[in-house]
Length: 189
Image 1 (cartoon, rainbow, N blue to C red):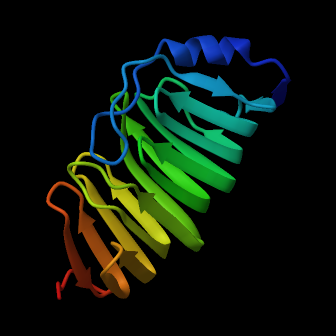
Image 2: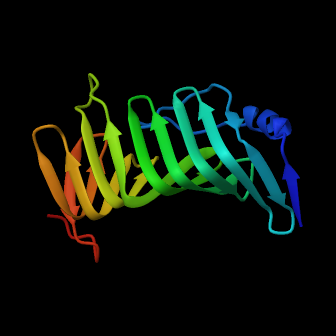
């Protein structure tokens, strides 16, 4: 059974009270309230699935916007959010643009982001601690705890003067290290 919710103020209030993501170098931590805006929402109680259209979720400098989002839970204790249609994930000086993205939350923390596109793109502006870097691939996965960005499927990373390409690239954000490997295994080159 689907229930439509044209006014989602109750969802906004609930989300504003919940903790969000952990700190990391690409998408920094923020202790500010979460804001959720959507043009419309629908809840399927039988499937336990919330569908939001024209969605934008933000907290401090971190935001996610998309044409559509589906969520399994609203409390972020153990939920998966699927975004589709012009997905933009942005943090302080960094962004991922994709056709679709899946964000995994556990214990009220953003644990994993998987973005897909043809291609999906990643960009981080230069800071005092990091040089500017950009890249693209069919799939971009970011492990928020390990601070590791994995680009696979026609992957490419650029830092202004250098370019690395391959079927699979791993960028370790904390130390700025890039490794190339094959899609079939973990062999590094």
